[in-house]
Structure formats: structure tokens, C-alpha cells
Amino acid sequence: MSEYLIRPKAPLLFRNAKPFASGEGGAETLPFPSPATISGAMRTAWAEQQKQGQGLEYTKENAELLRKKQVLGPLLVSEKPGCTQLLMLTPRDSLCLDNMKGERIIYRIAPEQLGEGEGCDLPNESLLPLHLQTNDSNKPSADAPAFWYL
Image 1: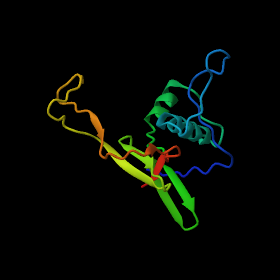
Image 2 (image 1 turned 30 degrees about the vertical axis):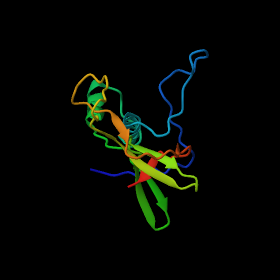
Image 3 (image 1 turned 60 degrees about the vertical axis):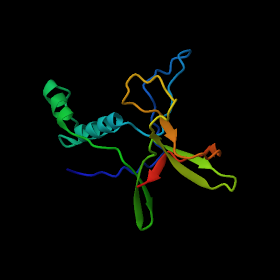
Image 4 (image 1 turned 90 degrees about the vertical axis):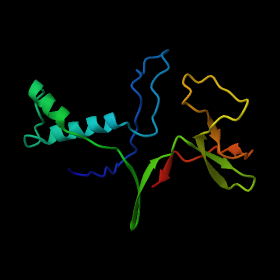
């Protein structure tokens, strides 16, 4: 297995697959590339490097060979002199609130048993509604990070 660190020389832009045609809403920029996007880019780069830079001919056999190339990732890293840190997507079961002092407070959103006299219409009795694990009345952070340092 090999690891690759992609250091762009210019900003990288990733978008969804919607066409740019007018009247259809158009493409949207994505905050981070999908695993399928990175897999396609890595397989394309590998194919172009084959046969002394002449590229790989498009044949059924070569297409199957490329499909077998397994790509894991992407993972986001932050590089500073003497320090490389891995970042992960912010957990979906978290909520960042800002208090009156401008401090960020992070809470977990978790399933919780219903109390006596409470009910819900979830389709299965084993499913529990999610609750914020505090009575904090502060507002959600407008600039909550999309990624957390590992």
C-alpha cells in the first residue's frame, strides 16, 4: 500500500455532477471531494503514468485493471512547520453553541429514553428520539468548524 499527500499548486475546486445548463440550478461547489472523486483522479493519474508516459489504452482489460486499484480516503491534513495533523469531518451528533462571552461549547446529541407520558411517532419502538444533552439556551455557532483535529 502507498500513501500520497496531494499538495495543490493552485486551489482545487470540487463540484457536484449537476450540469451547468441554464435554468437547471447549475453545479454547486462541494466543501471536500468524495471518495469516488479521489479514486477516479488517482486511477487516472496512474493510467497516464503507464507505458513511459504514453498512457494506458482504453480497453476492457485495462478498465478492469483500473477498477481493481483500491483507493482509501481522502483524509484531510493540516501542515505547519514541524507539525502535520489529521482532520476528520465534524461528528453529526455534535452541536456547537457560542455563549455570551464568545466561547464555543460543544454538546453531544444522543438518543434518550422517553419519560412517562411522552411519546413519538418513530416507526420502530427501538428507535429513540435525539436530545441535546443540556438545557443550554445559547444559539448554534454560525462559524462551527466543518472539520475537527483528530
